[in-house]
Each structure stands twice: as C-alpha cells, then as structure tokens.
Length: 491
Image (cartoon, rainbow, N blue to C red; front, side, top):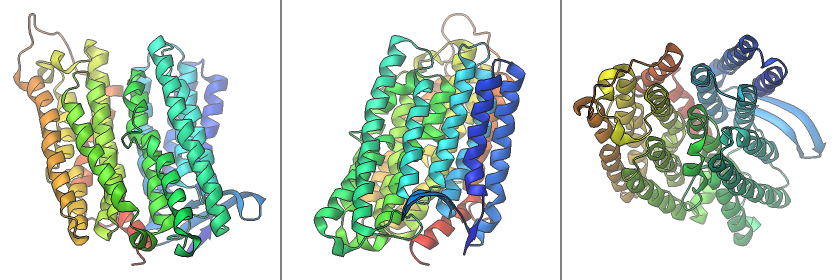
C-alpha cells in the first residue's frame, strides 16, 4: 500500500539544512557540533519512524516536482530503500560523534563537517529515489560532495587522489545518465516502484546496452574490478572520510544502484531469461578472491581495509546476481553486514593512528594490551568477515550459500569458502600481532582512545553481534530485508 508522506523528502533535507547551518555558523565549535549531532539524531528518528509501517508493507511516496510528463523528482521509501537509509542514518550519527573527536584541532573543519552532512543528505536521497532520474541526480551530487573530503589535507597526494576519484566516478555517472535515457525511450518510464520495467520485446541489443551501461556506471562506486582503482588511492583522506566512503555512502551507493538495476529496472524474471547476471556473478567472484589476495600483501592498515572493502562489496553483487530469494536476502542484508564491521575496523585504525601515529600493521605489536577495547572491537569485526556464527558476516555467507545451491551454482559456495579462508589469513595475523606479540624496544605508553572515538567503535561492534544473533527476532533489520525480497519475488 502506498501512502503520500513528506518524510522521504524530509530525511535528506535535514542533512541539507545542517550543511547550510554548518557553513554559516561552523566557525563556532559549539554550533558546528550542535547542528551536526542534532541533524544526525533527527534524521535517524525520521527514518526509523517509517520503519513500523515499512514492516507492514506500507510504502511512503512523495512527488516533489515534475519536469515533463513521466520525468521528475520523486521519492519512495520502500523496504529496500528503508534498509539502506536506516543503515546510513545510524552510521552517520556514530560517524559524526567519531569525527568530532578525530578532527579536533584539524584545519578546515567547517568545510569538512559541511560537506560531510551533504554526503549523507545525498546518500539518503539515493535510498529514497523513486526513479532513475532522481537516483542519478543524487548519485552525481554524492560525487561532488565527497570530493572536498577526499582532498581534505590538500597535499599533492590528496589532490591526485581527488582527481582520480572524479575521473572514475563522473565517468560512471555519465554511463548511468545515458542508460537512463535509453530506458525511458524504451519503456516510457523511469520508475523504480515495481519489480522490473523492461520487457524482452524491447530487443536483445537494447537490453544488453542498458544492462552493461548501468552495471558499469554503478560498478565504479561499487568498486567491481577493474573499476576499483580510485578506492585504495582515496585512503589518503582522513579516517572519518574513509569510513564514510567504505561503509556509509559512496560504495554503498554503487551496490545499491546495482540492486535497483537487477530488481527494479530489469526484474529477476527477465534477467533469468536473458542470462545477463551469470557473467556479472563470475566477475564479482573474481573481485572477491583477487582483492582478498591483494589484501594479504598490504602492510598499510587502511590499504588492507580498502582491498577488503573491494572484496566485501562484491558479495552483494554476487548474491544479487544469483537471482534466488535466499541469495537476494544475503545481498540486501550485507548492506548492513558489511557496513558495521567495516566501519568498526576503520574507526579502530583511526583511533590507533591518532593515539600512536602508527599506520602500518607491522608496527602494531602489543597494541592490544594498550588499547584492549579498541582491538577487541576490531577482533569482533574480523570474526564477522571470516563468517563465524553469531556474527553479521555469517548470516550473509549462510544465505548466499543457500541461494547458490537453490540455483544449482555450487561453485559460488566454493567462492564463499575460499573467501572466508582468505579473510582469516589477512585479519587474524593483525589480532595475533596486537595481542600476542611484544612491542620492540621500549614499552609503549599508550592509553585507550578518547570516549568520542571509543564509544562509536564499541557500539558498532555490538551491532555486529546483534545483526548476527537476532536474525530471527521480528522487527529487526533482517525483517526489512526479507520484506524487500518478498516484493522483488512477488512472495
């Protein structure tokens, strides 16, 4: 049931207003923090206020403006969009708290927090986009708003990373725009409010072009190989930005676009007939394994995290490409199951760098004794990515394996198993070095991070456990993922 409601517009608008207030009053530290935290909290309340209705099958819609018949800005909070928005809004609040502590004393804080708010505004706009045009506009605004954060330090390395980021992501956006024009020409609509708007009668050539262009366009931010080159380079940004890129906004916008392409532009029935998703599934499998192997050889903490992100994002792409209900559940749930452990890791890496100045894994000997809560949270996140039961990552791998077996594609179960082994190979050595290896030379005089850094780390680690242990509890995020799957498959 669809209900006209202003809240799908209000949610992104809150962050937009926050950004304006930060730019106007942000030179005063009190007001900068007040507006940032207040907006994050209010946005989360607005999004969560729609959760009970979403679980009951209500879809909140609002047509903002129509440019020409069938083309305009419109918003729709369905189950899939609500899942993405709920994850983003929750993490924005936690990341804002973390960023206040991390950026203390840093330069350009007004610019940082202003564009930080704009990024989350555009992310929620993507989540609630009713049509491809609205999705494209917010997708491109996200690129533009993130650029000042990537180049925040304004070093030559940061400026090079920013240029590379723009080249990749703006090119991807151009592919999405052209594909959207072709979709409208072929179908007469850009709506994402139904499980598929294209038909086989439109011709194999047209459908192939649309699928390739949307996959490439969204695949840039989803970091599917060989489109991932911008992501490791962007690690030059401050840690809160890296967390934003990897867990909250940019990369999730890419995989969310791929989910919309598969489930709402084409639909599972049409794609099953066309067979387009099997090559995509194998490309995602290649990305999962290759990025994991590369991660093994990264000594820089954030670069290892970056290649892990590339691998983990392709779990979503692979699961969505399998086209079974179990796999679709895994694809949607992994939006959260990747976000919370990954942001825990980035927060931990940032806290360690802030307290000790150490950015390489080989330098972390004994850090677990000095920062036990930080490294304890990191260990929980590591176990999740390995797929240990009662953690978020296990849920993804379990449901994706069931979906692969349902489709008769047992090779993808092997991919999942190999990936788990590789995850253990590059996460557990960090845990070992931190807790079981004595520091060289003099004893480190290090204490735990400040509360503004440590509390978000611990809260995210708790979420990692809750997402794995409460999967059968009604009303939990998993229920929202199941509601989205039921709509896609007409169940």
